[in-house]
Amino acid sequence: MVKIIEIKTHQRTELVDITESVAGAVKSSSVKEGTAYVFVPHTTAAVTINENADPDVKRDILMEMNKVIPFEGGYRHAEGNSAAHIKSSLFGAGLTVIIGGGKLLLGTWQSIYFCEFDGPRSRSFYVKIQED
Ligand code: ZN
Image (tube, helix red, strand yellow):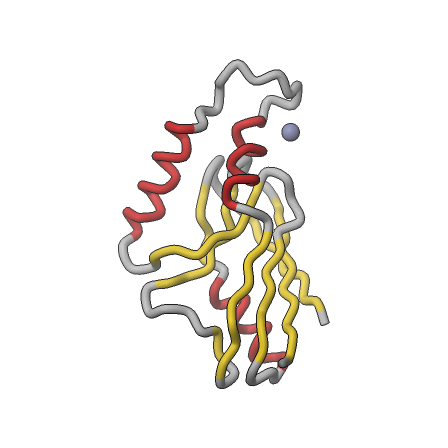
């Protein structure tokens, strides 16, 4: 079973906490032990796990990514969003979280983030729940 979840992003670069959406897919699947695979079907977005407590962590990640990979960098790609393509590949299009006792086995301070690198846009991501 694959669940397709739509989201809207609101900034050019943004980390959107999607943990509750993924947890909802786990709950509705009734799977107690297994894995949740999250996949982002976009070439200028990605998915990652990082801290959910201090919002400055998200801010710092984006600030530093935008420094290392600036929006304008003498790129050749005519669409003008090479920085977003590069960031997408660095973060990656998918990740896996273990399910135990019917819950995502994330650390206390971990959340799953949809990474927008070329927003704002209407986006989607897939969640596949696999039972052990
Ligand atoms: Zn492009």
